[in-house]
Image 1: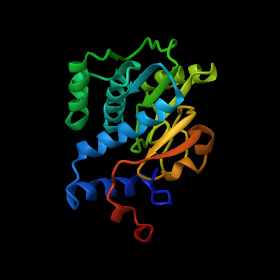
Image 2: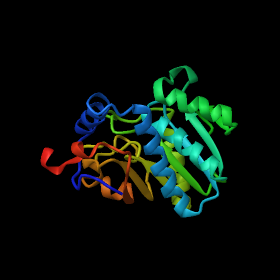
Image 3: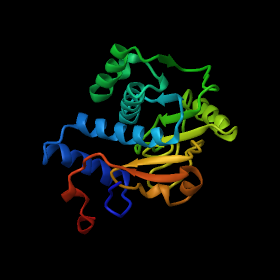
Length: 221
C-alpha cells in the first residue's frame, strides 16, 4: 500500500481530496471506488465468509457500500445495515447504494435492534474523519454492539478511522469502535497514532485510492 509516509490531519485530507478532483480531474466516484476496493481486498485476505457492513450516511458509508459490492461479487455472504433514512443519501454514496439494490445485496435500514451476531467479520463504515462531537444515538448503540462482538472474537475492520475516534487527536468521542484492522485511506490520519488511537485502531493498513502522486509528495506537507 502506498502513502505519503506521514500522517495527515482531517482538514489536510479534505484538501487533498478536493484538489484531486479539481486540479487533477479525478472523479470523486473513482476515489470512493478505489477506497472500497482497497478495503475489500484486505477483508478477502482474512478468509471471512459471512460479513456484516454497518454504514452511515456520509462518504464513509459510501465506501462501505463499495466494499459490499466487491465482496458480494467475490461470492461472500454480505449484509448491509444502513443507519439512517434513504432520503439522507446523496451523491456518490447514493449511487453505490442503488447499485447494491440492483444487485440484490441484502440491505437493512435500521435505527435500533442490531443483529450481526452470526457474522464472521463486521465492517465499520459509520463515521469518517469529520467527527467532531460525541457520538449520539442510534450510532452509539451500534458501536457498542460492534464492540460486544469484537470482545467475543468477531473480527472488526474499520474504514479510514474507527468510528467515534477523533481523526486528529485520537480522542474517543464518547464511544469508539475497537477495530482489529483499520484500513486508512491514501495516508495515515494523525489520530491513529495519538491519544487512544493505538488502542482502538488495531493493525493499520494504508489503502491505495489512486490519489495523485504529486499531492502525496512528503515535501508538500
